[in-house]
Length: 90
Image (cartoon, rainbow, N blue to C red):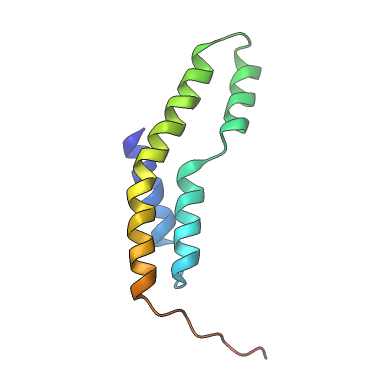
């Protein structure tokens, strides 16, 4: 799970484009997924299985622990990076 979240952060960050804010948002969205969708699909596939909720909760905890250093790094980087200049509309 740590490797999955880390790779998702990396991929989202790399394909996020030139805007630092877009990079951060895409990285976090890629890594976090949507736990309610995962639980719904898992419950439909195996109704009554208690381990599903535990696995989703474990993933949420792991993703939180892995993304916290990334968020701290991006906040420090945002303070140093100048914002992109707005391009005039044509």
